[in-house]
Length: 445
Image 1 (cartoon, rainbow, N blue to C red):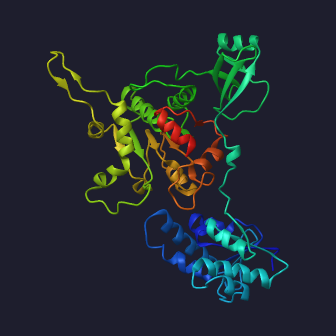
Image 2: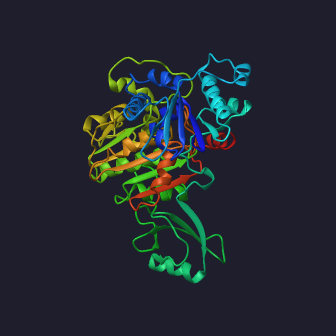
């Protein structure tokens, strides 16, 4: 028997079918009840169903190599075994009702622990309650964290430093300062303050090709589709959004910091004012807060409109108001979001239909991206055609998708995995601008 045995819960495999091969040379045990649960998900068209079918394909390929009941060796030296033994120890049967799937999975882990005392047995589950129950009966339990990032070390996209008065003046006069010290990520912002006074601060962006810092050049306080920046975080966000060389922008942070509003304003500016992209495409995951409304009648657009209401709210702020004609006696009609859609400037697209598409030369905004899994995030980013820019916005602490958290969601993983790339930029935003009340709620709840 291998030194370590990992018993996988259903939610781990549904979250990532590749978990079968993520434990190197150790033994993976899948209780038979997990296969039965996975079988219930395979007939849908969502990500959960696709993952369920992928698990079946992986296990069927392993089955051709040998007996899964005894264990089949994988290409990376591990062993995958399906446990069909319904035996559980007396301890498990006394402590738990064995008619529940979760308890059967825990009981399987306890069975292997007692049968192979020389091996370290760990139950892997993304369900906190399962981990708690496992711990209560003496089974080591852990979360599946192969996609996780350390949130206390989460990349913010900007930092602060000090400069001597001479270097501070040189940066102002030349617009460039060579980097002679720390290591920075491409497009990381650095806010330099003068050592002799804290009142003077310059926001710069690190350019890897020149190994130095430049003053913000794409956003210098100008009005972008009827709004201007209100703080330095929004300055940095606008600078990335307006830079056509940056192909992926990630904006994370608490509610009310302006992430979505800035992204839409920049998108409208690039599509309509500058004609840089052919279309602004906006989408968001369909994840309700609270109880779902159920099936909605109507066309695709009519079904999707309730989920896109936050986008409509932001558009009301950005679109020019109604005005008077040259004669001064009649009001000009206010431009609406439907006008932009009719003209072909704007498309609201459910993520359900984005798989398989190729989107060249478009400005794409994915709102509430924290509700996506890393695999779904990969699917979306790979839709980008030539000349396309993608903007991901979201709050890692407002997640409505089961088994995702602040460190395992697709937005957080994308930020950490792509921060080394020159065509990617990120800003974590913390300054609330929606209203004092909204900022208060984001701070204390």
